[in-house]
Image (cartoon, rainbow, N blue to C red; front, side):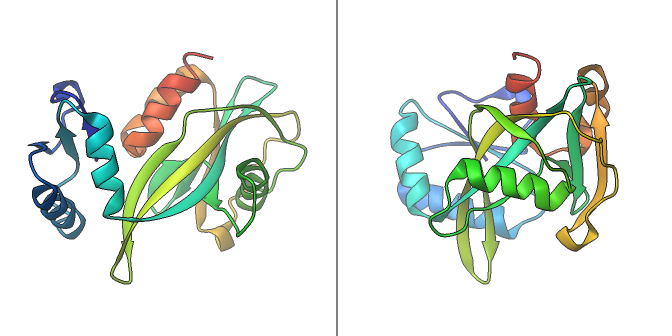
Amino acid sequence: MVISPEPDRIQKYGLFHKFNTTSGLYKLISDFQSDPAISSVNIYGPDIKHIWKIFRIYFTEVGAAGGLVRHTSGKYLFIEKRGKLDLPKGHMEPGEEPETCALREVNEECGIKGHSIVKPLLPSYHTYSWEGISYLKKTNWFLMHYDGTMVIEPQIKEGITRIEWLFPDEISKIKAQAWLSLIDLINTSIFKT
């Protein structure tokens, strides 16, 4: 789901919805979550802050953090989880700071040590349902530096089925297999750092 001031027709969303009422928005969210045929939704209206506030009320919010890991070779670390290419990330533990969580999750999901945070990146949000509860997960992202061995052995116990290190010019081959929010992060972080 994307919120914008006007229909964002460049993105080829599955459904466009002009925000009118809270009940209409909540019905759209419910339909989106229950119908796998709706691949994505662009909710638009002139007052994005108001739409975002109403949107967030619908969900239980949870925090997560992860890393965009850049090796000294210039390659970036990607993982495959649940059939989609992604970056290592996970839920924050109670009282855990986002930076600590991001470093821990990269270690747990990719088996690397000695990585460090360079700078924070823009957060991403995504929704999901679990046991009848709708969640909005905010993922705090961090650009990380790593100069160790480029591990490629997936951490199966973490649900990782593939690890890949790619140069920026190789990233286009994974875009079709990645989440939309990940593509936004890649475009604003790798190609503008």
